[in-house]
Image (cartoon, rainbow, N blue to C red):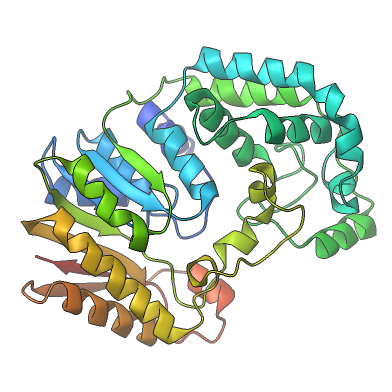
Length: 367
């Protein structure tokens, strides 16, 4: 990509906020916008029962539509809330400075964290993060969920460009592996001032403004339980587009992979795999088919009769057949078209399933 094209990626507020935040299996923002514009008109509703970081919902909001969706993982949900209901720059900066003032009082609590945290963050950053973990009311306050989302983006990534020692940005590595890797290379975390660091990041994020807060919303929970509650929020209208990408069968565990960001949200200080089937890796094929079928069936009452259903998933044989089975069960009177997308290099599916025979992703469109 040339320099002009790279700069153009972030020339508007919509493009700059679309990148919040790092997450596996993300829709490309441009693809999401194209689908929304092709299948809906301004003011119409787009539904996403597997919202992830709310890329489809944000595309709807950016194009003058209303996005409504549900996400089960708090990390993706916070990202979505921050994009769709963004606090002012002034309030976020004020909150960061206040957290910096409170941080020294969390030194004793930070000192009790496992060894991983000593290798991952300098002392000032540790204190600051423990304070943010305790003080930010990210479920209820716009300033707090926006501040938390921006912190989670920078929580780990490239050394000197994030709050952590060298680490992947999309996935938190296991503590033992990370500590051994850092120890072998004698890599200690850089001594950062977390407030100054975050204020620079906030300045860049807000430099083009923010998307006006409209009616688009993302809700936290399991779609199998939460979809019925969206009926009242739709009022007399119904969604004109169901646009989603379900989790891929047996590919990755979003809760395990995001354990460090989940810790910042109040979770345990080491990786854990939750017990609920929809918070694991979807390795049980029967459970996977049932999950898809249930979500699509419970989405149906929220759609207009002429609504388009647009689903992107991976192109492996089982996932393809399971998705078709679930869609045809929920929408027996709609026609189905599919299109396979081949991609050069590794896809997410290949990263976690090296034996995958089918590369790329597949789109199912029903109308």
